[in-house]
Image 1 (cartoon, rainbow, N blue to C red):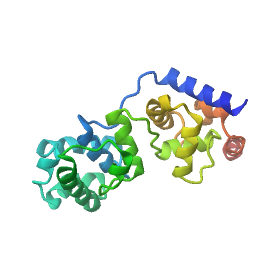
Image 2 (image 1 turned 180 degrees about the vertical axis):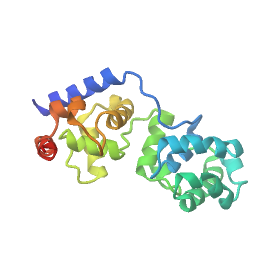
Image 3 (image 1 turned 90 degrees about the vertical axis):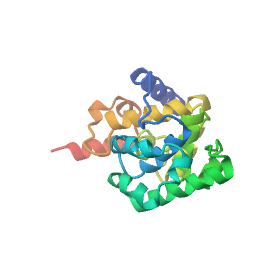
Length: 219
């Protein structure tokens, strides 16, 4: 099967499995999405969705957020981990949004990346999900599957993002990256993976990945 055929098969299967794709994080506007994505670093979406209602009940906009101290923010968000860094980042970026953007979240990836605690992936998620601007945020699931499917070298997420943008049509990016995340969680996890339950990898996967799986699974 040619790579173009593999890409088409992948997109068709993902669309079949996930015609509607839920957003993993709960939010109501660009600001609350930005905060939720920052909190999700090295945490789970489930945990973040348990904590954000507590935080947003006190501050769901930058003006209210800066009324809280860094320590108050940290105390609320402790369960998601990395709270010292995240609380400083949330307080700091909220002040910058007020000072430089009239309290609004900028739509440009470059502007977002200049905010405290906002990396490329976070910025990409925000422009994609909050503003509908084409982007392809790469998380661990996408990085893993792009390698398993033979679509990327697996060297780093920068290369994986570049390969994804080259292979997949731009108009599909925003939905497709979410479909791959859900697929990775459900059918192709890092641990406890059963290739027999992974229809995409079983059909188009990298030969070395498939061979390695069956070699390890032999008694």
